[in-house]
Length: 136
Image (cartoon, rainbow, N blue to C red):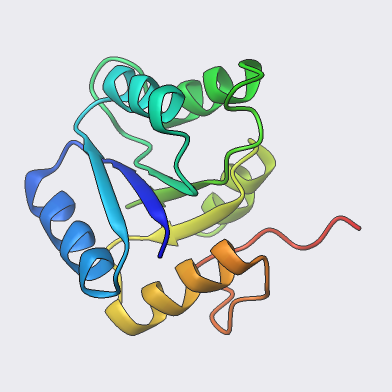
């Protein structure tokens, strides 16, 4: 399966997301802050990065900008994994450059289906969970 990096500072959220992904057969890398996430992304080049937005120190949007600015990580798939779930948050984060959007708390089946769709490049059956429309 895929190698997925989770950048999440909440230990409970990290544990839940990691277990769901591991149960689905994915290799999981973990970072509790953006700087460690950037280091792991550069070193391991995961198939997908799940980035919390509210992180200590550097936030997820700033971390995404750093990934996009580095030729080695610019093309990584990066999805927001966030408690920001108000009207307009999904659109705002996709416009900031995230490839997908996963609101917390996650719903296990929908989350796994959306991750699989994102990794495969297909459309998710649960558009509210993930996605950037194909720009063509």
